[in-house]
Image (cartoon, rainbow over all chains, first blue to last red; front, side, top):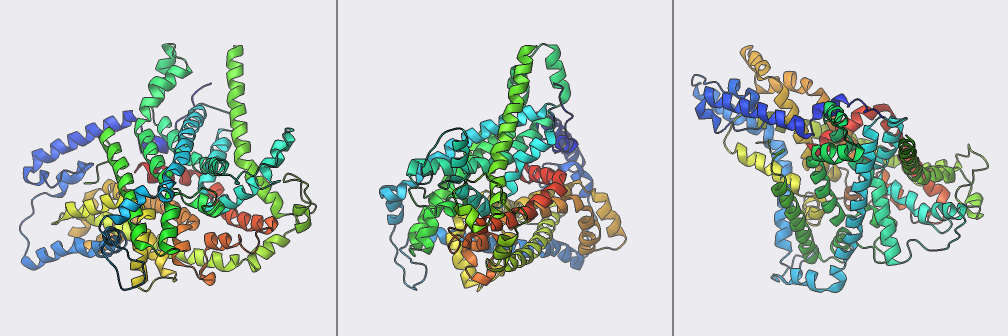
Length: 354
Length: 276
């Protein structure tokens, strides 16, 4: 099997380690240039891809006052709408949510009472509220299987395989499909006498097991659907990262007598480490905030309630805005913690926005 | 040599197995959508072929009684406005952040950066109150505002592209007397085409598929988008798998067509969106 040609865009994307290194070098050189040219601006211009900031802010003669005022104002005119939306729909809700979480507000009445940390205590002590965390465990386990399978398919499809594009498309397509449609497709799949039972009976295995009928079986089925849905996205990201590893590395390894496993272990795996960590983090936060598939398929019945389903029900069915806010704050903190851990583990890349 | 043959066979077997796992559930739903009520109920199993493969009766039911026509209209309207708005907002933000130095620039950048870490599902409890107090609840403007206002990924994508446009172009235009808005409109925006294509694809698919936001903010029957209208099939058609299947196929089909037509752009778009 020869290695297929890397996709040109994937290479340009540069998710691989090799290209990242050169990018970092170029960045460092650019930085050095900036500092040599205008030491005063260098502090403000400590930007990631600052290759052209050197030429940009060459000293200008002081402009007249009106022109200068306009120049100061211009960026804010561009940022007016974006910042207004950002504050209204991201920061104001967070602030409100934290505030609600210390009250017993029901979301409608003008009256509310400050209750201290009572809501938080309730979340961690009431067993029926806390059990949603165990449900996340099914999704976490499923994402381990998902990542391993995605990695396997990405690796074999990065070598030349017949009908490569067909297989790639088939594996990726589910991640584009509407969640409600997926929910219905799999409701029929797990139905009594549905697709799954029919396929099993083809192999001579007659069953009338209600796949969504008991908590364990229902949660495993739902987690399986989420693997079906999200595997393709991981797979395509891994494939892109693998293909951005320079092909010469494989040739060199082959000359040295490295087998497939060694190529995977010592070339592919280190090459896709950044994408792999990103995927792991996204899977963890995705498992904790699973909502669509279980809500559409079972509505949270038979022990399949997840954290987000519970929060939505508390807030919009039982009017317990205070308690729901506390739950949402807890989820937000967990996800921020996980992300922070990731940034600590892989501190190098993609913080080049500033 | 034989070991290689075996390995190769196993590789192909795994690929064929995966293909079956992906396509079988979808294929069965397509078959079911072409069956009559009697055929789905007669216990002949899910894999039998429909008697009349061109029986489009269920599609008519789904379209007419299931309100899928209104749903496609609503989805199209929300999609066009919010994707258009996202492109404008993202490109303006990227232009302002990359081409100007101003006070609090770092703070602004940090605000956008941190917002990217906050998953939208967690904050809806409180966002709901704000949307409500703005009078947007149960209107099409609620999802539009939320899609436009909380998309940080597209700002990242635009930022990468604005950076790659040489600053000398801006300066040449400025010497010709162009102001910042003319530069944005005449120079930056047209050069952002690849980024715009990426954002339109990624955002468009996300909006088309979103269930959570329309479900929370537009409970009215006539404001159903495809996700919520399809979801409502669950009640009245709960035993009518042929109608539900037709609805699901109606929703999946546009996605399949777009995917087949724009494969290359879609792969690249999602790669850019995720590894920003």
